[in-house]
Image (cartoon, rainbow, N blue to C red; front, top):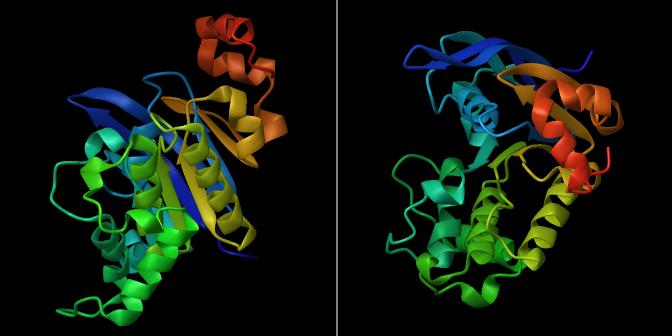
Length: 248
């Protein structure tokens, strides 16, 4: 029996005494591209950050490939929301991607020729090699997101976690990002994406995790993306989804 890429058991998270995530449990196998969806304030980003131990949890157990995050940290890449990044920090595009190679270096080692070649190759993969000497803050939102995806690729991880990667990006960047994520999935990697655009969920993911503070449904897209299931999470918002042309 294969070990789950991600196993979450009875996860609870609260902020100032207010429960944000309630008793969430699921197992995700390797080689999946899963979208975490749900209404605003449902706890999508909270779930992602709690899984990665970026915020404290009240209780719950999380493992990755059968190991703790401490043991497997080098194999986990995280792309945060753009709003959480200081775009004024004086760093070039290439040096940003080079940061992704640090987990594979030993203590006190600096990136060398091989790491710089890997970083440049990852920039080529996301179509940003021509911008390698630009300051990261000079780029558009979509370009910045592609650079941070390149940083994640440079880490050569087994698991990718992305928090709202398509917010504020242009169509070309969005298409580039999802194509690369699907390629990673095809190569056996596990990819988890916090996502808000329901109109594209069916095209982007093979599994969905529907949440509204607690787990509503988790499974294949066709099993989750059904009116009777979606309405449990979106409640009053569900009628508006049909008006907006979201096909479910």
